Length: 286
Image (spheres, one colour):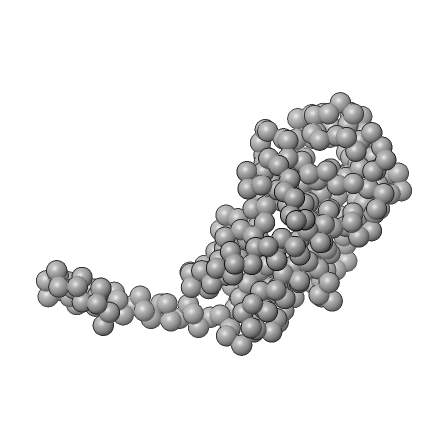
């Protein structure tokens, strides 16, 4: 018995000894059960097979590269459970114990236990690089008035657009889709390329890499100067099952020790990285 347990039990009465002993045994059993849920032979990742540029079944997404990094540091091969990132994703993957970690998950979501965040990013305004719109930094800029702006329906920037009178001519794209068959982000950028819209607003880790990969004539401007709610920046973590504190701490330590390598993967992909307070763009090129 550990010394701290013996010392604590010395201050208890006989009934208390029994109760405390049972509590210690139950705690040890619960920890053993929790640890047993995580595979020790592979890094089992839950991922969308068609969520370009984040995760792809051909493993070309930047979240795939992050998984490779984590697996390499743990000395484990990476195995995937593929499932569309839509209703039922967590229930049918992580909670079903088909896998042990989701690479990208917004901090504070109750469906998972979050690790410490490994990046903070924001929504971006995407415009032609050689236009005067490339100088716009806020959605209240008068140069956006009367323009046709692409927006994902129900996303936080839509509230800012409404506040600034930009919704009337906006083109809306669906939020919840099976990305094996539809890609709102790519459709939005294709419409901008074709001149059917004048600008687009996307979540930075989607918009930034897509612009870098496929649309060199566009620029993605991080929206870090919006001061009114809702916020447009989010801290992104890895998600594990509720209660798996040992696994969470192991990943927390891995993130802390390898943050520079994580940043390098994200920067190479074109993900806009910003300060934890969401008010400035980070330069991680050094």
